[in-house]
Image (cartoon, rainbow, N blue to C red):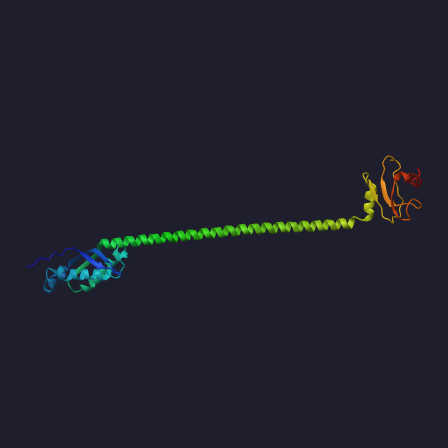
Length: 261
């Protein structure tokens, strides 16, 4: 007579598997199962009391190796729950009709051989170095872009300032030209003669050769002598209409005669 424990039982196995990148992975996997009470008679007839080592363990370990081979080594620890779920589904399908009930499968621990760990560390170091180089390259690229932008801004500023100064010079030149044009239009010969006569500081007065106007000297200021350059009266030096220097005192009598009180 054999006694069968129909309670849930856990079995743990240490399994060495190869990952998708052909690296060894050490896995501690556990399976929770029990005999189906209603089918205990058939279990005893078909399999026997040693059902785990005979049919469960080989199928369980083979399934773990098969599923792990679809994952890269570095992803096995983080994908352990997904791997366990796939293993359970396969084992349940393979043990169908064997009078056993599978409750769960779990990967209790995932480890790597020392040589693999050293390879992982070297790979991670290389990746970190690569990331550092890429980061430095990104910083250098950004610095160069900032320098180009700053230089372009300074160039635009210089160009705008130069254009502003050129525009200011152009406007100033236009204003000066307009002012000169206005002065040329308003500064007539009559106005110049008036200003010459009107200024008390004039020491020299230039008169046109053909000026047909009397020369008037203020008789009330005998001490103020002015030199008048213009045509002499007939009979006083030179030919008719010639220019000569005239002392205003010589013309005093003529001025008084022309301006009787």
